[in-house]
Length: 303
Image 1 (cartoon, rainbow, N blue to C red):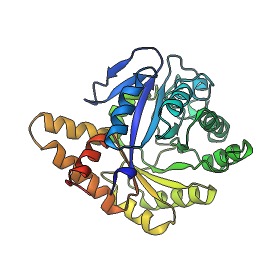
Image 2: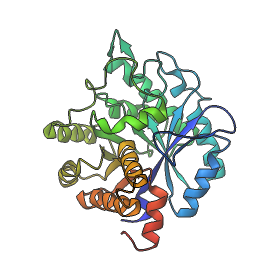
Image 3: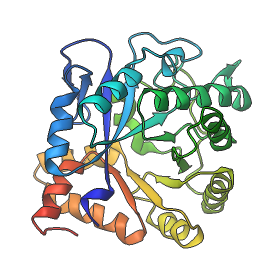
Protein backbone atom coordinates (compact mmCIF):
# COMPACT_ATOMS: atom_id res chain seq x y z
CA UNK A 1 0.00 0.00 0.00
CA UNK A 2 1.41 3.35 -1.03
CA UNK A 3 0.25 6.63 -2.52
CA UNK A 4 1.33 5.64 -6.02
CA UNK A 5 -1.48 3.08 -6.09
CA UNK A 6 -4.26 5.63 -5.43
CA UNK A 7 -6.48 6.93 -8.24
CA UNK A 8 -8.92 9.78 -7.72
CA UNK A 9 -12.16 9.92 -9.79
CA UNK A 10 -13.04 13.48 -10.79
CA UNK A 11 -16.23 14.92 -12.33
CA UNK A 12 -15.91 17.63 -14.99
CA UNK A 13 -18.69 19.75 -16.44
CA UNK A 14 -19.13 22.24 -19.25
CA UNK A 15 -19.24 25.91 -18.32
CA UNK A 16 -17.06 28.35 -16.43
CA UNK A 17 -16.34 29.03 -12.76
CA UNK A 18 -18.13 25.86 -11.64
CA UNK A 19 -17.32 24.17 -8.35
CA UNK A 20 -20.59 22.52 -7.40
CA UNK A 21 -20.91 20.16 -4.44
CA UNK A 22 -22.61 16.85 -5.19
CA UNK A 23 -25.46 16.59 -2.74
CA UNK A 24 -25.34 12.80 -2.44
CA UNK A 25 -21.53 12.80 -2.02
CA UNK A 26 -20.60 15.38 0.63
CA UNK A 27 -17.13 16.79 0.04
CA UNK A 28 -17.11 15.86 -3.66
CA UNK A 29 -17.59 18.42 -6.42
CA UNK A 30 -18.22 18.89 -10.11
CA UNK A 31 -15.63 21.22 -11.66
CA UNK A 32 -15.45 23.18 -14.86
CA UNK A 33 -12.09 22.96 -16.58
CA UNK A 34 -11.09 26.48 -15.53
CA UNK A 35 -11.41 25.47 -11.85
CA UNK A 36 -10.30 21.85 -11.91
CA UNK A 37 -6.80 23.01 -11.05
CA UNK A 38 -7.94 23.68 -7.49
CA UNK A 39 -8.49 19.96 -6.97
CA UNK A 40 -5.53 18.85 -9.03
CA UNK A 41 -3.28 21.03 -6.87
CA UNK A 42 -4.71 19.47 -3.69
CA UNK A 43 -4.13 15.97 -5.00
CA UNK A 44 -0.64 16.72 -6.24
CA UNK A 45 0.32 18.31 -2.91
CA UNK A 46 -1.00 15.21 -1.09
CA UNK A 47 1.07 12.90 -3.28
CA UNK A 48 -1.83 11.50 -5.32
CA UNK A 49 -0.47 11.34 -8.86
CA UNK A 50 -3.26 9.56 -10.79
CA UNK A 51 -6.63 11.07 -11.70
CA UNK A 52 -9.54 9.61 -13.68
CA UNK A 53 -11.78 12.06 -15.54
CA UNK A 54 -15.54 11.67 -15.97
CA UNK A 55 -17.27 14.17 -18.24
CA UNK A 56 -20.76 15.65 -17.94
CA UNK A 57 -21.68 17.61 -21.08
CA UNK A 58 -24.35 20.28 -21.39
CA UNK A 59 -25.77 18.60 -24.46
CA UNK A 60 -26.60 14.91 -24.72
CA UNK A 61 -27.91 12.95 -27.69
CA UNK A 62 -28.82 9.41 -28.73
CA UNK A 63 -25.27 8.60 -29.85
CA UNK A 64 -23.43 10.33 -27.01
CA UNK A 65 -21.50 12.39 -29.54
CA UNK A 66 -19.83 14.61 -26.93
CA UNK A 67 -18.01 11.54 -25.62
CA UNK A 68 -15.70 11.62 -28.64
CA UNK A 69 -15.95 15.27 -29.72
CA UNK A 70 -12.64 17.10 -30.07
CA UNK A 71 -14.03 19.96 -27.98
CA UNK A 72 -15.75 17.70 -25.43
CA UNK A 73 -15.37 18.56 -21.76
CA UNK A 74 -13.05 15.64 -21.06
CA UNK A 75 -10.92 16.29 -24.13
CA UNK A 76 -10.49 19.93 -23.11
CA UNK A 77 -9.65 18.85 -19.58
CA UNK A 78 -6.97 16.43 -20.75
CA UNK A 79 -5.28 19.05 -22.89
CA UNK A 80 -5.29 21.60 -20.08
CA UNK A 81 -4.19 19.16 -17.38
CA UNK A 82 -1.40 17.72 -19.53
CA UNK A 83 -0.10 21.20 -20.18
CA UNK A 84 -0.37 22.54 -16.62
CA UNK A 85 0.17 19.38 -14.55
CA UNK A 86 2.62 17.25 -16.54
CA UNK A 87 3.52 15.15 -13.50
CA UNK A 88 -0.02 13.82 -13.11
CA UNK A 89 -1.03 10.51 -14.70
CA UNK A 90 -4.33 11.07 -16.51
CA UNK A 91 -6.90 8.32 -17.06
CA UNK A 92 -10.00 8.52 -19.21
CA UNK A 93 -13.20 6.73 -18.32
CA UNK A 94 -14.51 5.38 -21.63
CA UNK A 95 -18.27 4.97 -21.58
CA UNK A 96 -21.32 6.61 -23.10
CA UNK A 97 -23.79 6.74 -20.21
CA UNK A 98 -22.82 10.28 -19.16
CA UNK A 99 -23.20 11.48 -22.75
CA UNK A 100 -26.33 9.75 -24.05
CA UNK A 101 -29.79 11.25 -23.72
CA UNK A 102 -31.14 7.86 -22.63
CA UNK A 103 -28.44 7.19 -20.02
CA UNK A 104 -27.43 3.76 -21.29
CA UNK A 105 -23.84 2.75 -21.96
CA UNK A 106 -24.17 2.23 -25.69
CA UNK A 107 -26.09 2.74 -28.90
CA UNK A 108 -29.71 1.60 -28.74
CA UNK A 109 -31.62 -0.71 -31.00
CA UNK A 110 -35.17 -0.14 -29.85
CA UNK A 111 -34.86 -0.28 -26.06
CA UNK A 112 -31.85 -2.62 -26.04
CA UNK A 113 -28.19 -1.69 -26.24
CA UNK A 114 -26.62 -2.87 -29.50
CA UNK A 115 -23.34 -4.33 -28.29
CA UNK A 116 -21.56 -4.54 -31.66
CA UNK A 117 -22.56 -1.10 -32.94
CA UNK A 118 -21.41 0.42 -29.66
CA UNK A 119 -17.84 -0.86 -30.06
CA UNK A 120 -16.98 1.63 -32.80
CA UNK A 121 -18.13 4.56 -30.65
CA UNK A 122 -16.16 3.34 -27.64
CA UNK A 123 -13.03 2.97 -29.75
CA UNK A 124 -13.55 6.46 -31.18
CA UNK A 125 -13.95 7.86 -27.67
CA UNK A 126 -10.78 6.18 -26.43
CA UNK A 127 -8.73 7.50 -29.35
CA UNK A 128 -10.07 11.03 -28.84
CA UNK A 129 -9.07 10.96 -25.17
CA UNK A 130 -5.55 9.74 -25.88
CA UNK A 131 -5.10 12.30 -28.65
CA UNK A 132 -6.10 14.96 -26.10
CA UNK A 133 -3.54 13.77 -23.54
CA UNK A 134 -4.87 10.77 -21.62
CA UNK A 135 -2.10 8.45 -20.46
CA UNK A 136 -4.44 5.48 -20.06
CA UNK A 137 -8.03 4.63 -20.96
CA UNK A 138 -10.50 2.71 -18.80
CA UNK A 139 -13.55 1.28 -20.62
CA UNK A 140 -16.40 0.95 -18.13
CA UNK A 141 -19.27 0.06 -20.46
CA UNK A 142 -19.13 -3.77 -20.15
CA UNK A 143 -19.77 -4.38 -23.86
CA UNK A 144 -18.37 -7.67 -25.11
CA UNK A 145 -15.30 -7.19 -27.28
CA UNK A 146 -14.63 -3.58 -26.38
CA UNK A 147 -11.06 -4.12 -25.18
CA UNK A 148 -10.04 -5.65 -28.51
CA UNK A 149 -11.83 -2.88 -30.43
CA UNK A 150 -10.10 -0.15 -28.40
CA UNK A 151 -6.69 -1.83 -28.63
CA UNK A 152 -7.01 -2.11 -32.40
CA UNK A 153 -8.10 1.51 -32.77
CA UNK A 154 -5.29 2.81 -30.56
CA UNK A 155 -2.68 0.75 -32.41
CA UNK A 156 -3.94 1.98 -35.77
CA UNK A 157 -3.34 5.55 -34.60
CA UNK A 158 0.16 4.71 -33.34
CA UNK A 159 -0.70 4.61 -29.62
CA UNK A 160 0.87 1.20 -29.14
CA UNK A 161 2.03 1.87 -25.61
CA UNK A 162 -1.17 3.39 -24.19
CA UNK A 163 -2.48 0.94 -21.59
CA UNK A 164 -6.07 -0.17 -21.13
CA UNK A 165 -7.52 -0.62 -17.64
CA UNK A 166 -10.70 -2.59 -18.22
CA UNK A 167 -13.69 -2.55 -15.91
CA UNK A 168 -13.72 -6.32 -16.33
CA UNK A 169 -15.83 -7.48 -13.39
CA UNK A 170 -18.35 -4.65 -13.10
CA UNK A 171 -21.53 -5.64 -11.35
CA UNK A 172 -25.08 -4.32 -11.64
CA UNK A 173 -24.78 -2.94 -8.15
CA UNK A 174 -26.98 -0.94 -5.81
CA UNK A 175 -23.84 0.91 -4.66
CA UNK A 176 -23.78 3.20 -7.73
CA UNK A 177 -26.65 5.52 -6.83
CA UNK A 178 -24.67 8.60 -5.81
CA UNK A 179 -22.44 8.34 -8.90
CA UNK A 180 -25.46 8.41 -11.17
CA UNK A 181 -26.54 11.58 -9.39
CA UNK A 182 -23.05 13.05 -9.72
CA UNK A 183 -22.65 12.15 -13.39
CA UNK A 184 -26.32 12.66 -14.31
CA UNK A 185 -26.20 9.20 -15.91
CA UNK A 186 -29.20 7.29 -14.56
CA UNK A 187 -30.94 5.29 -17.32
CA UNK A 188 -34.08 6.97 -18.63
CA UNK A 189 -35.74 3.54 -18.74
CA UNK A 190 -34.92 -0.01 -17.75
CA UNK A 191 -31.63 -0.90 -16.10
CA UNK A 192 -28.13 -2.11 -17.01
CA UNK A 193 -28.51 -5.72 -15.98
CA UNK A 194 -28.29 -6.94 -19.57
CA UNK A 195 -24.64 -5.83 -19.82
CA UNK A 196 -23.43 -5.44 -16.23
CA UNK A 197 -23.03 -8.62 -14.18
CA UNK A 198 -25.28 -10.36 -11.71
CA UNK A 199 -23.67 -10.00 -8.29
CA UNK A 200 -24.47 -13.63 -7.49
CA UNK A 201 -22.29 -14.93 -10.31
CA UNK A 202 -18.65 -15.58 -9.37
CA UNK A 203 -17.85 -17.74 -12.39
CA UNK A 204 -18.95 -15.14 -14.92
CA UNK A 205 -16.76 -12.52 -13.24
CA UNK A 206 -13.64 -14.63 -13.68
CA UNK A 207 -14.63 -15.49 -17.25
CA UNK A 208 -15.07 -11.81 -18.15
CA UNK A 209 -11.67 -10.97 -16.67
CA UNK A 210 -9.94 -13.71 -18.64
CA UNK A 211 -11.61 -12.58 -21.87
CA UNK A 212 -10.44 -9.01 -21.32
CA UNK A 213 -6.88 -10.17 -20.69
CA UNK A 214 -6.97 -12.22 -23.90
CA UNK A 215 -8.18 -9.13 -25.79
CA UNK A 216 -5.26 -7.05 -24.51
CA UNK A 217 -6.26 -5.47 -21.20
CA UNK A 218 -3.18 -4.34 -19.29
CA UNK A 219 -5.05 -3.97 -15.99
CA UNK A 220 -8.36 -5.51 -14.93
CA UNK A 221 -10.78 -4.06 -12.43
CA UNK A 222 -13.36 -5.26 -9.92
CA UNK A 223 -16.19 -2.83 -9.22
CA UNK A 224 -17.41 -2.29 -6.51
CA UNK A 225 -14.63 -3.05 -4.04
CA UNK A 226 -16.11 -3.32 -0.56
CA UNK A 227 -18.46 -6.28 -1.02
CA UNK A 228 -16.29 -8.10 -3.57
CA UNK A 229 -13.04 -8.92 -1.78
CA UNK A 230 -13.51 -12.61 -2.53
CA UNK A 231 -13.47 -11.88 -6.26
CA UNK A 232 -10.52 -9.51 -6.01
CA UNK A 233 -8.54 -12.32 -4.40
CA UNK A 234 -9.66 -14.98 -6.89
CA UNK A 235 -8.83 -12.74 -9.84
CA UNK A 236 -5.50 -11.68 -8.37
CA UNK A 237 -4.53 -15.33 -7.97
CA UNK A 238 -5.77 -16.26 -11.43
CA UNK A 239 -4.34 -13.66 -13.82
CA UNK A 240 -0.89 -12.21 -14.46
CA UNK A 241 -1.84 -8.54 -14.84
CA UNK A 242 -2.38 -5.90 -12.15
CA UNK A 243 -5.78 -5.80 -10.48
CA UNK A 244 -7.61 -2.56 -9.68
CA UNK A 245 -10.68 -2.15 -7.51
CA UNK A 246 -13.07 0.78 -7.38
CA UNK A 247 -14.40 1.94 -4.02
CA UNK A 248 -17.57 3.35 -5.48
CA UNK A 249 -19.81 6.28 -4.66
CA UNK A 250 -22.18 4.28 -2.47
CA UNK A 251 -19.31 3.15 -0.27
CA UNK A 252 -18.09 6.73 0.08
CA UNK A 253 -21.54 8.14 0.85
CA UNK A 254 -22.33 5.41 3.38
CA UNK A 255 -19.17 6.23 5.32
CA UNK A 256 -19.87 9.95 5.14
CA UNK A 257 -23.49 9.60 6.26
CA UNK A 258 -22.73 7.25 9.14
CA UNK A 259 -19.85 9.45 10.30
CA UNK A 260 -22.01 12.59 10.13
CA UNK A 261 -24.55 10.84 12.37
CA UNK A 262 -21.85 9.92 14.86
CA UNK A 263 -22.26 6.18 14.31
CA UNK A 264 -18.69 5.53 13.13
CA UNK A 265 -15.30 7.23 13.14
CA UNK A 266 -14.77 8.24 9.51
CA UNK A 267 -11.00 8.03 9.21
CA UNK A 268 -10.76 4.63 10.89
CA UNK A 269 -13.46 3.09 8.71
CA UNK A 270 -11.98 4.67 5.57
CA UNK A 271 -8.59 3.13 6.37
CA UNK A 272 -10.07 -0.28 7.21
CA UNK A 273 -12.01 -0.43 3.96
CA UNK A 274 -8.89 0.45 1.99
CA UNK A 275 -6.80 -2.12 3.86
CA UNK A 276 -9.39 -4.80 3.13
CA UNK A 277 -9.20 -4.09 -0.61
CA UNK A 278 -5.40 -4.21 -0.64
CA UNK A 279 -5.39 -7.32 1.53
CA UNK A 280 -7.69 -9.02 -0.97
CA UNK A 281 -5.20 -8.33 -3.75
CA UNK A 282 -5.79 -4.81 -5.05
CA UNK A 283 -2.82 -3.23 -6.81
CA UNK A 284 -4.56 0.02 -7.76
CA UNK A 285 -7.30 1.55 -5.61
CA UNK A 286 -9.77 4.00 -7.14
CA UNK A 287 -11.35 6.03 -4.36
CA UNK A 288 -12.95 9.37 -3.56
CA UNK A 289 -10.92 9.25 -0.33
CA UNK A 290 -7.60 9.30 -2.25
CA UNK A 291 -6.32 12.55 -0.74
CA UNK A 292 -7.32 11.55 2.79
CA UNK A 293 -5.80 8.08 2.47
CA UNK A 294 -2.56 9.60 1.21
CA UNK A 295 -2.45 11.70 4.39
CA UNK A 296 -3.06 8.61 6.52
CA UNK A 297 -0.26 6.81 4.72
CA UNK A 298 2.09 9.70 5.44
CA UNK A 299 1.05 9.63 9.10
CA UNK A 300 1.63 5.88 9.38
CA UNK A 301 -2.04 5.18 10.13
CA UNK A 302 -2.32 2.79 7.21
CA UNK A 303 0.16 1.10 4.91
